[in-house]
Length: 194
Image (cartoon, rainbow, N blue to C red; front, side, top):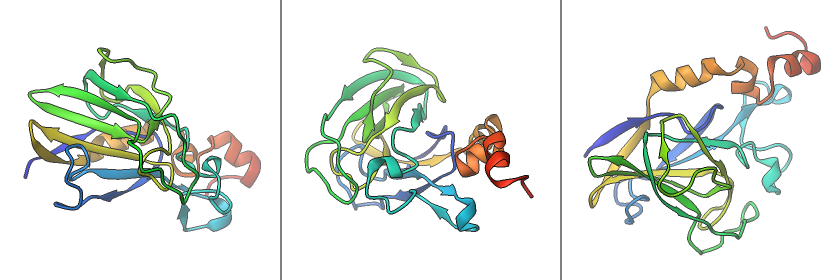
């Protein structure tokens, strides 16, 4: 089974769930990865959470409307937009919004459940370039991004390059990476980092 390492799609701490071999049959879904942002809230020391409050609104979720970055360099091959935004806990069986990047040599990388793309079909993108925002559409119960890859008719497994994840974490404030707020905002609200 082919596996590729890609650039992280968020500039924040995130978690993911891998789709195991055979779980989802469609190219782009098969062997894909669902990714969402979590934050360590100071009031919940030691535990990361995916949302504030009870998570009943998209705006409660740290992922919702967060910037999405290109996992690979290439050409924007396709963009599909679904105008329906799901509420957390509810799915719409219609197709998700997506961007497909042609990375060359037959490799295609799909990012699904996006919203508000800032690129167009035919644009050249570089890995790490801001391309869209996280949405909650299609077959989705909460705001997240599904990333999947395939070469010709064969699914390709994805992992995030740990060195590039480290580079992304160092590019932003430590507090922003972990808590979702700047170092200054953290100090103002909670005092000095220990």
